[in-house]
Length: 181
Image 1 (cartoon, helix red, strand yellow):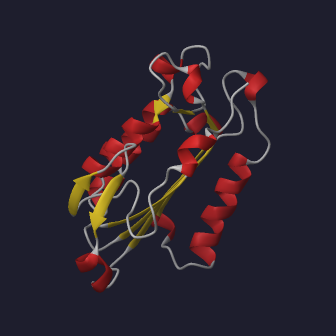
Image 2 (image 1 turned 90 degrees about the vertical axis):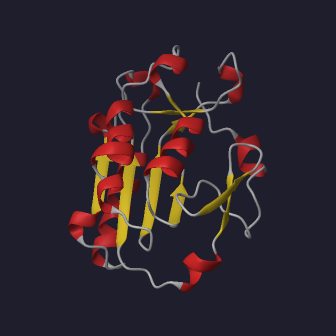
């Protein structure tokens, strides 16, 4: 059975640094996290807001289905539009069958966010799904399980957290990125 990797959560950087930030002055840190010099970004007003929201409750392999991730993603999307003043076309929602590894990477790194988000924008990325423990991979990597992920073949079909971090860092052009997994 798949579960969220708790050791990774315990090693998150302190509040003074940011995990998985996009462009700006960056220096590498350990554990695949990125430290950002955000002094300039924090002083500039937010020009626009974008949200990329993913929730996977139904998987191609039904034995690993979950109850709430798709509902949570839909509820967050509704909240952002109705209460947090995000423009409806600034919120991209992918649930269940829509949330394939390929589609998530395409929207995050090629088709949507990189084409729209600017340096002074705020970007929220929310992904609710299974996570794999590092022991499930020969090299100790952690994966997010998308709709089409085969839990018995994580390397070929899962979304490595390191790839997600790299895509955000290299492809999302905002100085303010909030990542919730």
